[in-house]
Amino acid sequence: MKKTTLLNQALSEVVAGMGHGDLLVIGDYGLPCPKGVRRIDLALRPGIPAFLDVVETILAELQVEAAVVARETAERNPAVQEGLTRLLGGVPVTTVSHEELKEISARAVALVRTGECTPYANVILRAGVTF
Image 1 (spheres, one colour):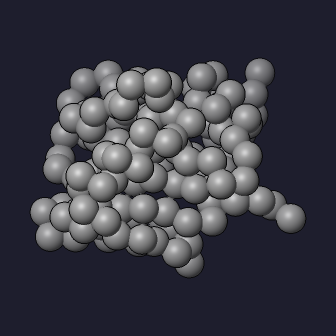
Image 2: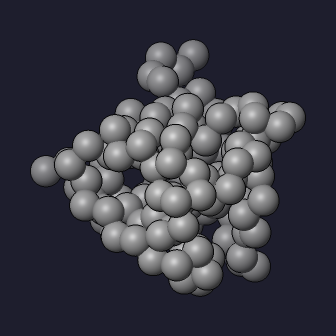
Image 3: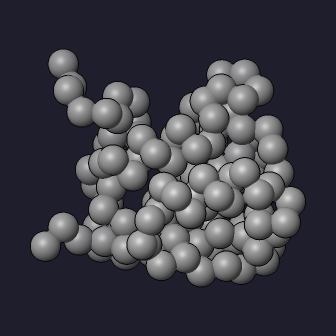
């Protein structure tokens, strides 16, 4: 039985298979999944699992060199923005429009849908290397 933090099999497979520069999207319940991008749906009911809980769990497993967040997040969802800032620590964050974030999502290895039902609770993580 797996001992590390991330227990979801599909998500573990995606993280383990990511290479340097690959993108992983973690999104709220309403973020559309682009055609051709694998969707890992964790949503059980509104709010479960919470976006920041999923981000925290993935960050424990994935080496991240950069992140992308929608500009609108800071104004429309300051709690999520503050949580992302705390969780990402020194990871460089690029802000783009929400529409641009959705366009970039089309290049992701996978999109993780959470149960988060607050606006602009989305982030794109770019995999780094551990050496």
